[in-house]
Image 1 (cartoon, rainbow, N blue to C red):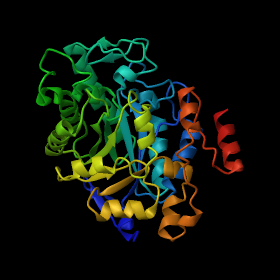
Image 2 (image 1 turned 90 degrees about the vertical axis):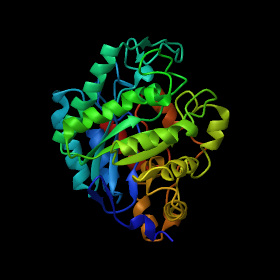
Image 3 (image 1 turned 120 degrees about the horizontal axis):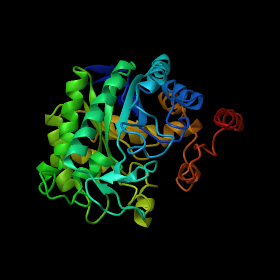
Image 4 (image 1 turned 135 degrees about the horizontal axis):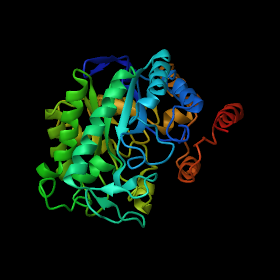
Length: 371
């Protein structure tokens, strides 16, 4: 039964035509310096035309280069990119989907930064970040608000705060990476101050405009954030007025652990995290994590584990996924191969990601756009 996937729902007062969303996925398609490139526009044209109700554009930085994961991270920290962002929102709308832009500060994972910053000086892949002062934290919170204003002005329908993947907002909440000794440390209520204050400042900046949150439920690290603290944090965010919570697990420090690599090959491997959050909040929850068949996606909705489905690699691999599922043509779906990590290796090398399962003509055309 796949019909539950194609019923409408509202997020923060914005109506979506169905329960399918494109989950944010970094592919390195922006131009050098974070511009909106022809390749990026072509990619989101395909994603919006897939039939999903909402497209969430990935990881736009609020502070380049110190907050950028790479030099090809989209920039939302400058008015110089305003026209590109407006064209991106227009492209998604033309494809028939609602448009959301995710804004982020990468913190200790800022690959473009000469010296990364973080809540505490915790070594990260051979680099030790600068521990932020309270004045610097205050400035970063304002940059989130400024970026959200640009998102709204560009014509997007909503904005998403990136509190996942172990980026800066999550670094403050995590007991593993927040080892401060001030009002931002210690008990969960203190570690949650920065993301909650960012949410408040963004709300003040954009007014009646939906604000979603990419939510890290479990770092999958022994000394990291886990459900016993993330679920109460989810309640705080819901009480503070987020439009939805998009639930995920893991960070760059756990993604490549052998047990996590094995887990990530299992269909629906993050749905239990979404379900744990869903039982605790009264805002819509998005579940993701290799939900690659219509039957699995429908069961997640029907069982109450989540309200919406986030499709990342399944949709990227086959943008016809929603249409084929709705028309009972799942046998024609091109599936992401869980044993293949070609796209990840390309991103790690600073190259745009392409799927080896794509038709040759599509692969050639997109490569030409990048080159």
